[in-house]
Image 1 (cartoon, rainbow, N blue to C red):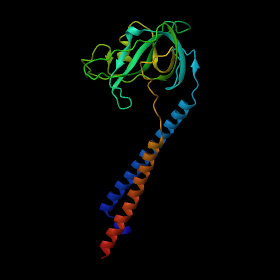
Image 2 (cartoon, rainbow, N blue to C red):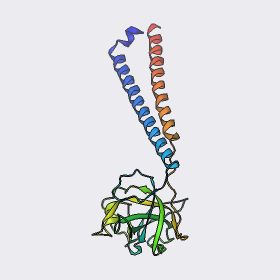
Image 3 (cartoon, rainbow, N blue to C red):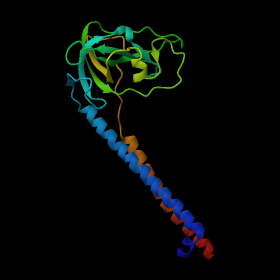
Length: 238
């Protein structure tokens, strides 16, 4: 069999198998790293403490719990389209909150107030429930802006394609805007008309299963190489 392996055809095949094994190993390692990252995120979310008096320039990780207060600017509310929830299509309701006290006085923070079901008529924008009036306090989780979509035209007034900084801030020009979004968890006074958007369910088991699959693929490549080699060697002897 050693002589067979030294032939040009088998050297090429062996090199291909080795490259495949290396590739499978790298993909497995990447999935393990992603699983570890998701595990850290899951633990951080489950053990997060609510931070008070967070200024708008402080660098905070996504899903950090914060408590902020201010007044909603209801006439600047925007709807982010195509946000399904529990099998139904709908919108995310985004309203800026302006701080009235402290170091952030006058700073706008975009708040994901909740989910609103879409109208049965595709071209009809549903009536947006008003934001709670006056000074309010909310508890929420830090979320990052989404990347904008290019070449999006024809959306109704007050409807945007993505939860992007560019689309949201275009409606509040000349204002100092927080560089993060706060996804509402609770608010006082409450708002019964909207459904609180649940935080992402972070689970690393899928990444772990993918990592194991790539290892199995590498083992299959090794076993297959030996099987083909033995079969061809046996055929040559006959």
